[in-house]
Image (cartoon, rainbow, N blue to C red; front, side, top):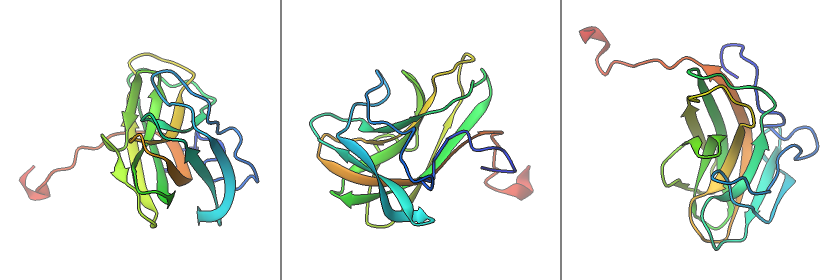
Length: 168
């Protein structure tokens, strides 16, 4: 997490010897069911990651992790994590939110390679809510196998950056 804030994503680094509480069950408007998520010894951090297999046929398949806390209206939350392909080369993204209220790390996803790629999604809920999830999803309808690791969700303060710090 950033600046000492706690990571709101349990087992985002997969070092607990299990993929729990990550799941491949569908969540309407958020993530389509996938074939499986398993624990594998190919990680960005500490040699472990989650391996997601999507069967193809529809977009937005992946794995999601329910976040066991309330998210407050008007505050900003940042999900960060690393994705890479295991097999296939389809676009994928990190998603944070609940149902139709969500934010993605990149519209349409980013084509995965054999190297770990950093993803980040910033989300601001309109109402205080629970039932929030973070997900690693595939944007296309093709079969994909991807790895996810180092997922962190924290409350954050957005900062506007000046293109020319001397002009402000």
